[in-house]
Image (cartoon, helix red, strand yellow):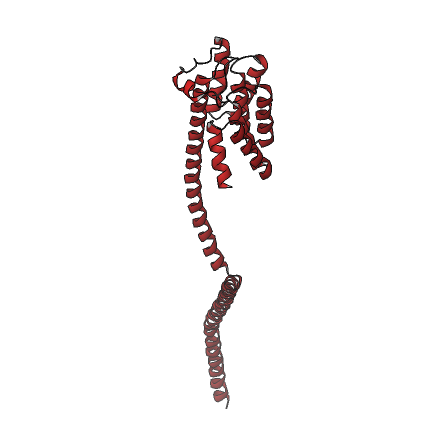
Length: 275
């Protein structure tokens, strides 16, 4: 019995040692298994977060698209583009109209200058009859044209300088210089013309009241000047621009009655017929 007991004890100790060794060997495996599971869990968490963020982004994009459609921004953008195209088209039309207006103004200035030149050629001295005042037709046909107005050189230079400003479109400068001319040389043969061009420059600036007053002053100060019919025609135009149609008609009728042979009377008749 003792031998048996002695034999079993070592076996038991050997078995216990073997179990202990097996247990110790299993510890690293379990640790490795634990680490692998933890990593998988973390990856799963990251994937879940990514999926959540992606869903949030998708929801935001869907909301923005819905908002754009509900506000009609696409239609608004198309309308803005159409407006831009219309503006570009209108800008081109404005440029064409501006060119045409500039050409018309140039022709008007040339007409004024040509008229002034012709009137200066037929203007006589203080005792000569004014154009359209009823001089006999036969005598006018055979009589030589009166010589151009003889003005001192300094007066002529001052007058021409002011007229050049008018022709250049510098109406403000022309008004200042023509006014200064009339003030400095009130007895000059060129004074009525200077007064007339002052009124025309004011009219070009759309100062219709000022232009009318200037031309009326010409009629009062130089009633025998050949400029009077054209000054009255300008007065009628100013009255029309100031919505005084009745006054404009009376002035036109006065031009026709008092100066029937003048160019101004012919224009007055045309305007009366058109109204």
